[in-house]
Length: 192
Image (cartoon, rainbow, N blue to C red; front, side, top):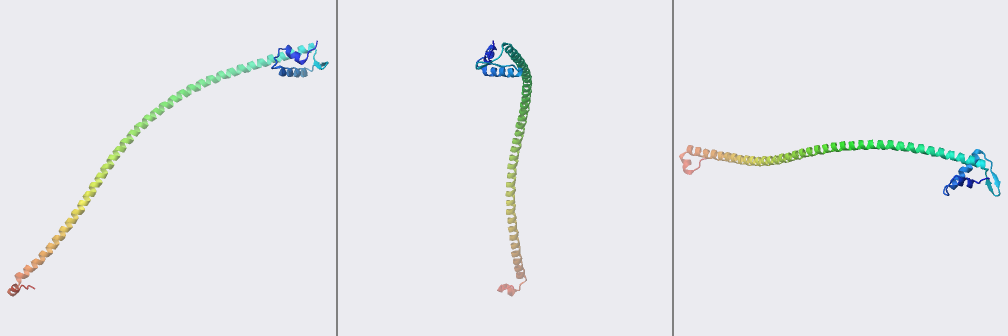
């Protein structure tokens, strides 16, 4: 008895969802093996001897495909395990590097705090020094003002002394003239 492509697919246990795909595989196998197809009414049928050849070939291919698929799965699983191992190593390296970075960062933070304290101390010292410098400048200005005042007073005193000396010299000249004047000049008080 002969079978159609659909009947061969059903004999192989094909589900309704995979029916179209399986029928195409059967047609491809018929062409590959160059199997003669007969027409019975409006259906194309294949002899039972050829049906068995088709089923055996397709089952062998299915087993071979499944074997390849299993090998590929095993290869993928092996690669996944390798990747997991590498990932674990990378995570460990990352963890140790993160700890090292945190330690270095902590040391740097401590160093920065220490340097900031030094800078603050220098800033305070500089402020104190600047305040003292301003006080010294103020004292220097006050001293310069006193020196100018005293220099002015000294110049005024010198001028007064010069004026007094000039007056004294004039008086001395008058006294000398009076002492050297004649009696007549003394009486008339004309000494010149």
